[in-house]
Length: 207
Image (tube, rainbow, N blue to C red; front, side):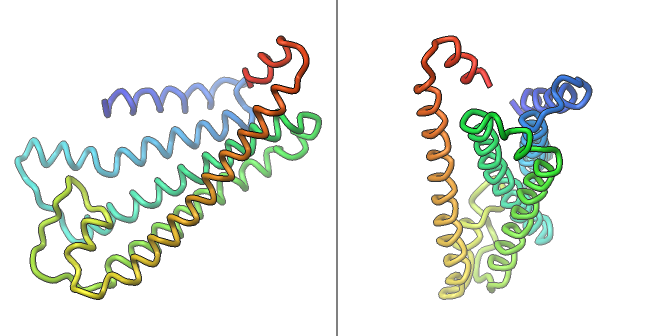
């Protein structure tokens, strides 16, 4: 499954890079999304495979911290990019005459950069919040990779409050982004449904 995902995403990146007909904002976002997907699954899966083959279940403190950072980093970046891609489709269908003005090369790069930056900030906050606590008792993480909830169960009593606050705030922010994502697609489908001809509807949905 890992190799299939890796090859599939590499194929998308290659095609959207070399094919001149695919040099549009939508495929630029898709290329970045595929890159993030490769990075995200590569944070934990190779280590898990190596541990399974070597019959080892250990990881260093820095390795664990790196896993937490990159998992959160790529997950948030992927979610932010999904929001950007939904906005791109909203502009393409609901404001087609202004699409090339709004979604020009510069704005596309800025949106992708903002997505990566937000993921970096988000990952840094969670690493700082998780590893600022003192860990008591067992050092065994009951998970095949280091994730925040599993690590917080090892923290000393009462020291997890700050990270729990970060998690709650993150969930609220994620929920708001999800609502915006849904709203954008509601506008898209309502616009498509108002198109009188069936051919026009099919053409709009094909974008």
